[in-house]
Image 1: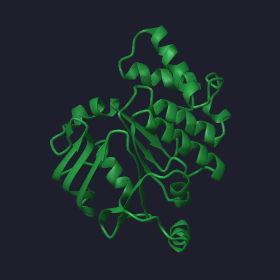
Image 2 (image 1 turned 30 degrees about the horizontal axis):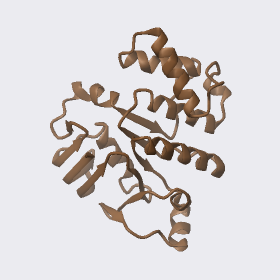
Image 3 (image 1 turned 180 degrees about the vertical axis):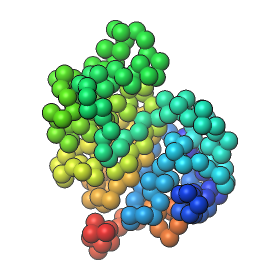
Length: 235
């Protein structure tokens, strides 16, 4: 089953055409890298998947939602079924890790205190942060904060996880650990779509690769050469 099904979709940022004639299908449990130079439309495409940018032209479905007809009042319903991971974490800095996760669960309809505490314990265990629930975000390293962001993203067992450069601010070893964790989550059944500039990760953790270039979103069938890698990482 396809969780994402786009046919002849044009993606606009304000009135500017960013991507033209996007045709892509992404199924359950896939791990998909989204690559390309800065400004080629990667984040804009991702934003259409969670309704931050409207889809006005073409046919676009995300899970059970027709994105061309989706009303703004239905966006919270869609986003409850997604996990979104941002490069800059977007944790609530005035409360502990536990309180950050509890806030999300309550906001998405969880009411039973025992169930909430158990779910928080489960996701922190899964991301290797079982002993960090009492910490404030400022007391954690960048890699630890990103693990908490992943824990937050998987609280409601989403079918689809969208990650916008989750390793962009992390060192090489921590980046490797984060992608390894995301691949484990994908193998457990969630589809992951991840923006990255770090093409070394694609070699270490193979996945499907889509790239944005010249206003097109295309499938990459061969791994990039070392020369292309160097050029893109310098970009």
